[in-house]
Image 1 (cartoon, rainbow, N blue to C red):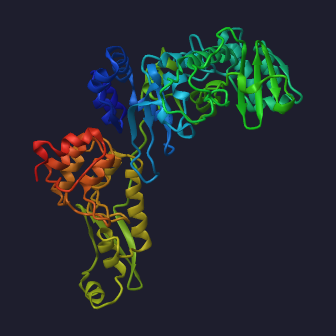
Image 2 (cartoon, rainbow, N blue to C red):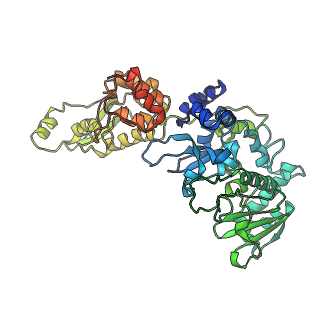
Length: 514
């Protein structure tokens, strides 16, 4: 997915890059230009051209449901928004839209990506190295990506000072770490500072980012307004005045559970009882924890959870500028080529071969008994239940089906194709009666897979247990390319509808004629 999305982005095809990364784009640049003018449209188009959707997905990890992430702000309180799915069972696709911030419920909104553009904007990925405390190399590593021995750490270079502070933090001596960074600590219990693990040298930059962010938020007088909390300081916003921030202010705060750390110039003051504090905490700009604490890439590398080759290529290039990225893709999950089923008090081995299951004996007797009112059992239940979710399958076959369908939830197109190459029957239905054609919106890069499934005999108009054909799910969750491919394969558009503006034209196109 990273390779496909990068190829399209470097070719200047940002919609193609988004499609390759599993993004749905609900943005019409011509409409934005008509409604908001050339200046805003040009800014939005530049942001979209430099959007690395695969990088954003890499940073988001498993998607939390119903989250809205503003990526960039524009005049009159409009923003480029990345939205996550509404339900865990929905395809794990990200939706891009151009919306007014006043229309978005604050409880579902997270503005951290406005402050951390290096997580999605290819123009800003070089910011990652200084955010980790490095100038010419990543602390604890060489510029090539090799881990430094312990006797080479902690010299007087900027990276060495970061290494010493990090080692003190990790040794549960946070007061010394802050003192090494030039901060005087005011805390009744200094060990309580161990919950805050920043790169101390980047805190001034983080404060500047927050103040710039505050200056970018403008609420217009005629916008719908309801009492809401300020995204940075937690107090209530008062319309319609813009939020004011003193660019010369030396105050900032970091919050973690019941603790607040106030940065007052070069003084770090730990506040555990806000009512007894001399500071007016809601009036102090808050540095989000994602911005204040160590970048997750550095933490994962230090703990051995990631190796340099596991990093996204843009992240690798930023953190190890002298190194070369050699990817180490994970091995494709392997599904069994045979399965043992308990049948007639014996264990029968069913072979997985050429897109079907091959039992060791005829199934006529079991099927006849079931037709006369008996319960389908043994090998017959295993094979027939694969294609019919109303038949209870033996535990071994249920495990195989669950493991295969999990590949769709993980959006692993290559693993799905590998399982079919190994001979797995493509006519499986899940517990909701959906075929593999129904589940294509969960994947990316499905053109070849769709053709393969149709050639294997899957019906593009087959209904699930709610009467929905594959086209209905594609219109709701999929990409325009998938909808066009299903229509070309014979999907009937009659009676179908969609609320998505990028799909409406497809249903009325000449290719959509039944």
